Amino acid sequence: MHDQPEFSRPVLVDTIPTRGMDMEIEANAAECAALAERFAINKVTQLRAKAHLRALAGGSLFKVEGRLQAVVEQTCVVTLEPVEQVIDESFMIIFGAEQESDTVELDLSMDDEDPPEPLLDGAVDLGEVVAEHLALALDPFPRKPGAQLPEVKEEAPIKEEKVSPFAALSAFKQKNS
Image (tube, rainbow, N blue to C red):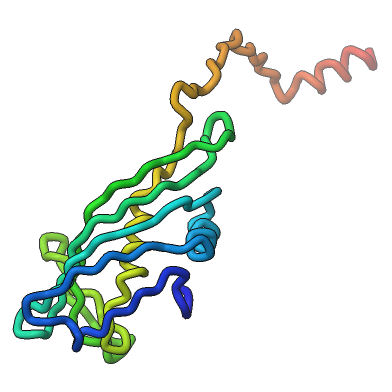
């Protein structure tokens, strides 16, 4: 993970009112270019999000719900031509207390809900939340509309002749006779 995220919009949890707060954020051109490089895609043309942040459990947990909208350009896995993708995704994440140590053991089960993400320096980085959800929304195999893999023609199977290990000896014997 990067020391300073490319698209950082920290919100101190102490500033979140009890009724919650709404935020709108948008990446500038430099942030879009840095995110494209981070995600190894051609371009992030546009990235914006609306989110609602609110405290839960008496202020020990913080819920972030929102929707991100982005326009990205990736490379078609078939034609290697640029493909534009419009992303419109909702997201939700819960943050908890700051992580005290890297040696904390968690007892997790597949049936359990995800544990809260740790707060860093008493803040939720809304920009990084949006960037991570953008990464999850990217098409792992982008394809230009109508692009198809070329058909593979079947070739006649090659007949393999089984050669006895003694065939060379037999040939040598006949040659010397």
